[in-house]
Length: 259
Image (tube, rainbow, N blue to C red):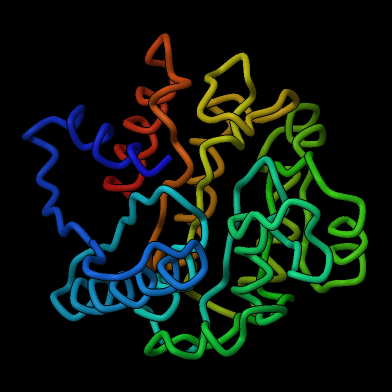
């Protein structure tokens, strides 16, 4: 998935007028946890610089933990977080059975785990759970589902979106969150898409959103909030044999830059 951002950039048109800031961490021992937070600190710097310059920060990242860097760069007050993902990313070190850090990204963003490391990211402050809307998730660990069930996170299942459409399903939770924060961070893990739309990584699973539903969701969010930043994550070109996933990413970028 770390190869995804570069592959997306190769497919962008020169006319898209996007300035690119590559974030890298060099000269350190490669540790999934430590290095991931080091990258997040660099992302925070880049996002803060973009905001200061009046630009819209669009983060292309291999993993979802990039969110804590983006949130750090946005600073306080905490924005609403609209999180589109096939997975809850709400595990903690105590509940995970895989040890996969990416599966703890949203839990970290709301302050449930990795608090000491998250505090090293300048500007980061945990987002209140009641300001989070989780959209399209359908693949959970048992303990993770339990954590979400007792949290303040608003969850919108993909089955409801398919039956009734994004507007009907999303307007109530978006309105509740909008009452708490007028700006939003939009996190798009591309495996929120259904497998019939695109296979974006090894963790992709059926039952997700159609691309048009994803694009409509972006429009709903940008129409109700000041969109402070967005991210596109978890695209692995190795699994994109037919090119559908990168085309979906480009469609998402076009929707975002026109917001």
